[in-house]
Image 1 (cartoon, rainbow, N blue to C red):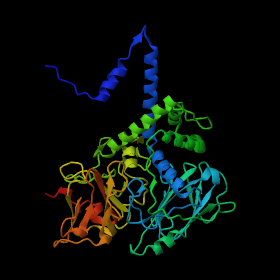
Image 2 (cartoon, helix red, strand yellow):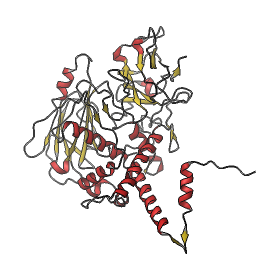
Image 3 (spheres, rainbow, N blue to C red):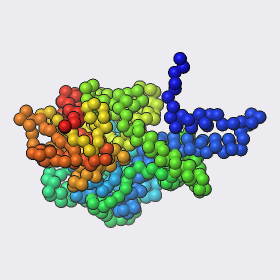
Length: 492
């Protein structure tokens, strides 16, 4: 008996392409045009997925600069915390954010003058931590950087910089002209954020040489702004601008050739006819959706992301150890167990679910770093849905030296869940009620459970979501995985 093979619209399309007619061993005119269109579509789809870290950064930059202005002297600060009106990938509502984008190719070397008591990262536009002269640090400044939280002057140098390097700076040599500046500050009292904002506004960014513009710190809180990865044909327009600003050091010659196959070449016009733009638009939309499919996988490139064998929580560095805090990956998303080959699925998984990473964030030293794990499903593997009520149990003595929080995110795009509440998060600083055994039950659902309103996170019927548990300053039980959060369980 012949087994019936699984089919789908995609397979039917592939069959159609594979069986297009040739006449006298040559493509017909219709066949040739169909294959050219398919080639452009496939090339653009793969280029989009390969470039997702760039597209993630470019989306943040485009949205930020449209709303708040551009330039090294503009540092938007979410002064009242970041809520769901800011569409950006998995933000944290429990710290004060500030983010900026600078161009060393346009402005030359820049000084980042940071006050004490910050935690931040300096990343190139691939969101790779920028290496620091001396080899001990990469990307981190503040608590996990060479200044150890005391503040200082950080000198950002463009690729291939050959000029003199003055003393008195921590020297960061970027792989791209464009640099993403990401800083966070911690508050002691959510009802009085002024001291924290005042601290952030002591930050200064200015050219190493020449006159400096006065710093601006626009308040980004409550401003509707889309800083998500670009998911239409304008992603390729933004990549063209970046290629023009960066040149060949943006990527290796093979991938620069792939971009050239789309018409993206430094210094050459990128003018698309309506047909071509339509193909690129469909490719970007398809690739974005592909990235969202990859983003919900628990096993990626043959590696399980499950943190615990009996729980559904995941993390791309689930195999991390104190000796290898990023597990089998380096922070350019290359597999150390595969000769440095790029992990072509793990990288889009990460940049669909997060942005920015650094050695300091991944620290395996108890009481340092951060511990992030994601739940996409309940304990039975069913996706979390806004119309269902769940309970999440956190055992006693949550191993966080600083604080912990649970935050909810839109399944559609990873931005904060718009649930009608001020913030889509709940954590230790909200003082949720504890059980008699010291554990904490959080309740998630469309209606507050009677008597447990203080421990409730609102969800929205018809909206899928996922959750991230963050432990700031994770202690030994978290790092050793001896403390385990419960799975989401349905409340009948």
